Length: 253
Image (cartoon, rainbow, N blue to C red; front, side):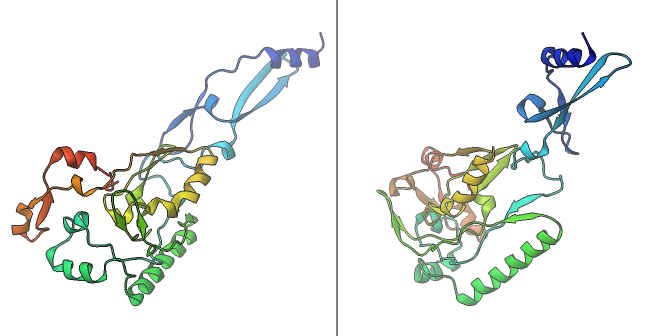
């Protein structure tokens, strides 16, 4: 058997082990068998020994890959203030806002925020994006949609709010995107602004989990006087823990 034949036979019979590799400074590990790997082989004609080593194809690792909060940032979603709308003054908004804000919410709920405020917010966010890009970070943005468009479910009617806070609706753990429902009715369909991005990440290998959405019907809200009212906080709170659990929306993510 010549050397070339030995090489071919050795490659066919070589068992692929379950190697593990550290991918970066975060010390996270993942099995090579779960990645697309290329094998480089070299044949030593003097010793008739075949050495085979796996080489990770970096392009095949999931584009969504977050295991801590201190690794160098590579890609991020930054929200938008375009077409931001004052939330309609419903029960869930009332229990989360201070009393001095109620007149403004009742008067302007469902309308666009003042143009000068939106313009300033857009300028600040764009500058933030430019700074990130100058640091080599890939910046992704949600779609621009009209949040003033009224929508209706079997349980309530509302207008939208904005897509300015991705951290409220999206959580990343490892290579999994967790999409959380919102606690406010005006934010019920806020996920639509991020849907094209999430589908893109999903097609590139990310996991995608969506938590159940609450109905947000009036029956889910029990309003009682809050002790925080006497400390300057919102005057009402939700007391019934069973109903509170039913409408838990994880928006604090």
